[in-house]
Amino acid sequence: MRKLLNVLYVTNPDSYLAKDGENIVVSVEHKEVGRIPIHNLEGVICFGFMGASPGVMELCASHHVGLAFVSPYGKFLGRVSGRVSGNVLLRKRQYLLSDDEEAAARIAMNCVLGKMLNCRSVLLRFGRDYPEKVSPEFSERLQWLTEGVRQLRESPSDTLNELRGREGILSKCYFDCFDDLILSQDPAFAFESRSRRPPLNRVNALLSFVYTLIAVDCASALESVGLDPQVGFLHRARPGRMSLALDLMEEFRPYLGDRFVLSLINNRVVAADDFLVKENGAVILTDTGRKAVLAAWQRRKTEEVMHGYLDERVPVGLLPYAQSMLLARHLRGDIDGYPPFVMR
Amino acid sequence: MDPDDYLMLSGIQHFAFCRRQWALIHIEQVWKENVLTFGGRQMHRNADDPFFTESRGDVLISRSVPLVSHALKIYGVADVVEYHRSDSGIVIPGREGHWTVVPVEYKAGKRKPDDRDEVQLCAQAICLEEMYRTRIEYGYLYYGKTRRRTEVALDDELRRRVAELVAGMYVLYDAGTTPPAVLLPHCKNCSLVELCMPAVSSRRRSVDRYLATCIGRDDA
Image (cartoon, rainbow over all chains, first blue to last red; front, side, top):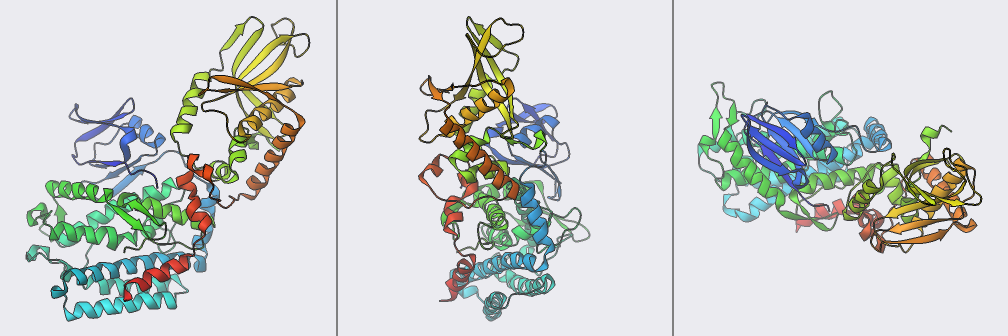
């Protein structure tokens, strides 16, 4: 596996990025506050509106460093990439399979299987670590989930709609357990249920923020292996939507996203006042909260995990890349299916 | 066939080394730099100056010479072409006398165990022969590591090998297929090893069985 490099998170919304030789220079109000050689970077994510010079964009594009812009609240705005690269034949194959309901369903099926297996593992691990906290409902739902995964595999869905339906039911079953996984007694960190646009509590605000980070990584990873992040299998193409990135991230939501959010709360990396609760109930991460999350995220990415299919240790931060490559290899016909990443 | 659609001459060295490596670069359009390729690029940058012609008495040295062979349907650039004054050979506008054409290919490393550098040089010579309507009997490979040039005889066997390789390149290119990976010792020197994944791709491990193991694992 290739080397994991750093991601530069520019959190100050007043920062401007410029190029100086082979360096990215970060300045605030015309004063240089940081300087990083491009060779040390995997990607750059800017949380702000000041932007970057065309020189920086060229520098990033020519070194295959992803450059993404995200609003201060974590909403994805856009990405700069160089000219269209990669194999046009691979992309045509991707489009062809995306239009072929049966073929699309087979790939989508493995994405969903990966996700549900990882959901189950999150619950199983919690049950092992905190057997005293496990309620009868929790065990019952875990059993449903296990049964659901087995059925998914034994009688796969022929149509994507059916697959989406089954995925929805199993996901709900999993999120119904989520409150049990939060060890904090603080009512500020009650989960209740999944809410988005806007997130209506702190847990959901964290989940949405971390999912954005994963989605950006998945889109960049897909593009770096020559796939089109907009053309998916489980998620149908819709203008502006990173459908394939969403497909790819299904298996990462529980493994990378949910477990990470739980550890932030349970290990008190974030506190209740790291969030701003708006008058209408929408919850937003504050500046300090966002910094704490990103610092922990960067640490998490450097941890290594055993990849069951590749049979080698992979830094967590490279998992989206490894999976993109496996997907491309499957589309090219090198391997006989898409092997999702499944946590042990 | 439109000359714009010709294959790149430099690809012949990749193809001679590994057909899959060539296909990854020229069909799948992936490229990954490593220490070896970076060194090579630096070296070519030094040799790369199309407006520079050097004259050393009876030897003219021209850099970055554009090449094409309509017979082989390949195009490219020669690092260095030397013109040696002789009794016969080609005529160069603005110069007196006759000159023989001698291609020189610069390589950052050292001699390879296979013939990938020789076939590249020979392919360049075939282009030059076609462009100058002359015959080239030998060329040189210059190796940066040993700082030595080796003379290469451009015999019929080497020429046949070049024609064979180029034909093989067109077969894959026209079909748009990348040959399956074969894990070999030389894979560890390949800059594309992480993209090629020879260990994974040649193992052809069943994804179905992998998923079955994942599902069964925690049941006990």
